Image 1 (cartoon, rainbow, N blue to C red):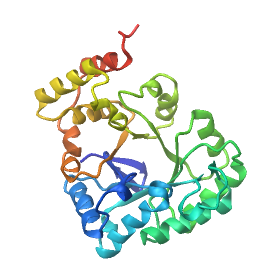
Image 2 (cartoon, rainbow, N blue to C red):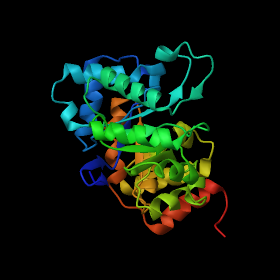
Image 3 (cartoon, rainbow, N blue to C red):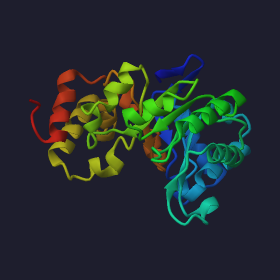
Length: 297
């Protein structure tokens, strides 16, 4: 499995396992969660993507229970988590309204709660989950820097930020923001032409892609010609259509890291199939053309 350098001493597997729905599985036992992680590790997938809000603030503890039950497993992983969304659920059930909080106090408290729930002394990457209209970069930036200095967080980044949001936060930080996790797929192609991806490429920041299969909608037949092409290309390379859709993202020179989320052990075992072939330029544009519904100008 190819690895991507986010900092000189932090590398991620090119494919990332997303744990958004890990708490929704019928079996959340440490043994079953460990089986998912081991299925990832057997393919060279070492990076796990979490967030405090996942599962109504329960998903991190599901992972933590598995790590506690299997000493030594944590050392094989890189853990990503996120903060700043406050929803009326779990530990934030008293909140009157869903909102964002990028205050130093909230970020620090969120990290402490994440460390406790996951039973670890550090996370490898902390992301600000959503842009906060009330962000004070002179408060948020130093708070993130302090977490890096403390060793509780190895690196920091953002998620769903536009270029101006990214620049604003970066302007008040000593440490570099090392990624922006944004929606990218054959059903979410705007970022390839609206400047979001170009901005990151210019700064040599490797982006992460959430929902690389469009939340499953890519495979539901709503775009029959696109799905047929994915299946045909997959058959030509001995992989299924989901692998082709992910390979489409991997083909981009920005070194995109797709975040693959599934609770199925069978599907987890096939995540790395996307790396089994390299897509040529014309095939990339064939799929892009079908995705946007027109020939490029």
